Amino acid sequence: MAEKIQSIRGMNDILPDESPAWQFIEEKLRQLMQSYDYDEIRFPVVEKTALFKRSIGEVTDIVEKEMYTFEDRNGDSLSLRPEGTAACVRAGIQNGILVNQQQRLWYLGPMFRHERPQKGRYRQFHQLGVEVFGLEGPDIDAELICMTARLWAMLGLSDSVTLQLNSLGTPVSREAYRSILSDYLQANKELLDEDSLRRLQTNPLRILDSKNPAMQDMIEQAPRLMDHLEEESRAHFSRLCAYLDSVGIAYEINTRLVRGLDYYSKTVFEWVTDKLGAQGTICAGGRYDALVKQLGGRDTRAVGFAMGLERLISLLEPAQLEKHLKHPHAVMLMMGERAQNSGLALTEQLRNDIADVRILNVCGGGSFKSQMKRADKSQAEIALILGDDELDNDVVTVKYLRADRDTDKPQQEQLSQAQVIELLNKLINI
Ligand code: ATP
Ligand code: MG
Figure: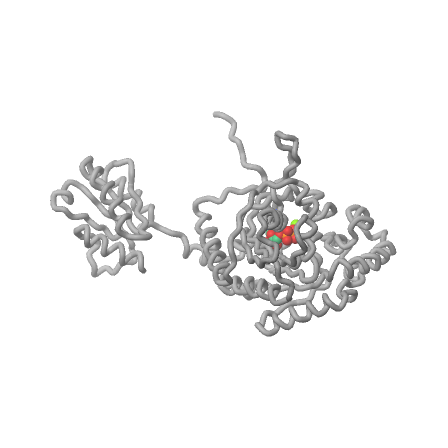
């Protein structure tokens, strides 16, 4: 036998028994976006490497260690997108949809990061991303948080997640804080790990994002950016808090929340859970007022978030997902050659006549017993059986396959085509 070729570590297949859960979530997300009147945008999964370097930041985990970067045949450096915001901004600028406009956009698709694969952390994973352009007040930040809270409620997850909130201020206030933080870190140099020592010069704020347990105490004691915000950011933040209070969304202010990407300013937030071990963040976002300009566009305010769908799905109860496993309404058995010809035409006709019907044809012929076995496996509600007898009498035999059916009712009967249509319409609406 030829050697089997395996998939790439951390890049998963979504198998037929898993895809209904994905379809369920995707459907809910589409409904959610619709209810806030947001528009979908789609952009490529590959972009020029420079786009991510300039936006996410050279000195970040993503750009330093996690990108899938390669040279294409022209010698250009390209990268698989590690996240969507940079590409969304690029698309917005390039297509002229940001200047003097407001845009409320969403996208859903795969992202790629070369991380150590483990539960909740993969090399190809999926995000819902939402980005809003052209609005600077905290009301839109609040809307995004409301939107995510609504999703948790829709999915019965409200008790499983908590909201953490912080403000990173404007680049100006951050610059002032940066030197205060640098002094503190310099004084605690002996506690810094290798990554952090390097970042001390290039990007000291990133050190606050370190997950190294040995450094947590030192980080805890560090001066807080929140205490060094200028008036504008402080006001923006307190109005956001007031909005959240007014809609009854609870939050925890976490002054250590800095996020792993450089482009944020003012609001940052994360929805976290303690149900997924170390991979506890299911949704994260914030304001990135400087990014559009930084990527060559006109100065445009912006705010957004991204949600990891693998983590979201793993929070759902299996029972909740099972409900959405779809089985056929009817399975068609055709006995003999005549029936095979008419049966194919009949099922095509039924699909014409009944919107949303799901009919499985047992292809491949075989004895009644073997066809019935396959029919049972399909978990269909009913079997439609067509043989010479039925054809001669212009009827279809209907066999009720569900064991939970009322025992007083016949388990099998012969119906006309019109009656079959009526029956299927009833089944669809259950
Ligand atoms: P983490 O701290 O868990 O590494 P992050 O800060 O790198 O997350 P973001 O870049 O903000 O994550 O991405 C937003 C969301 O995307 C995360 O909250 C998470 O749900 C999901 N996510 C990020 N990286 C992965 C991954 N490698 N595998 C699965 N989901 C991921
Ligand atoms: Mg990460």
